[in-house]
Length: 123
Image 1: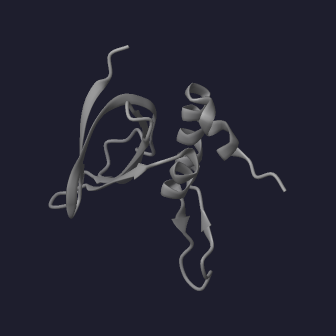
Image 2: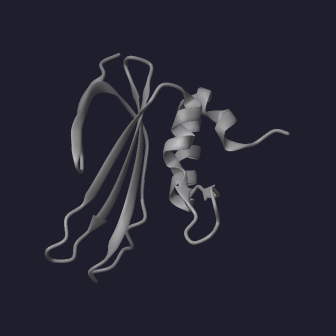
């Protein structure tokens, strides 16, 4: 199978280059003509066996630029860690998955079964 080459820009950091497959992508951009801000999440599997999680904070407001982050993950658990967002305020070290991140993770798990255990917590 032929892998696709990727170059993912990161705000304030070096680019991430790899060959691999896009497992899943999602956006929170509403279908509107109004100026908005939104998020995009993409999960890739590199030909090295590692994963890359790309999160973009996008805007179409004049003068604003997109904020881009890409995290290289050595294993499936690191994928979930890269998707977590901290609660604001005095919530301590609590964190959560956004609805968008959970949807993209679920879509990626449908393609890559190694990600399936990330969708639940067994106790």
